[in-house]
Length: 114
Image (cartoon, rainbow, N blue to C red; front, side, top):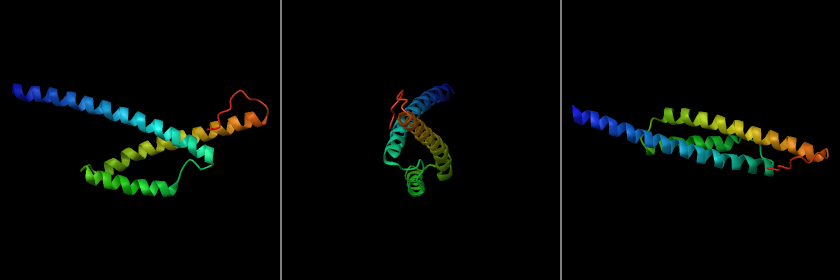
């Protein structure tokens, strides 16, 4: 019985460490997607790309299979990530539009061109 308690404690500690890595990877991913959003504004691309979304769905299916994780779970998780990313890209585009309007009107308080 003591071995089971020790194993449980050890396994929970490993889960906590894994969760820390997952959150750190999410932070890294969102930093990269913010940069993508800024690039999209700079080159005039819309916040969402249907072709890219289709490509990502195929990749996520492959990754789920490769790592033996339920595909539906992976899709649901990445739907949340995609929604957050899209909202961030829309915010970046809106802020850049406001900044362009400020510069055009002579108010140069900010010059964030994305």
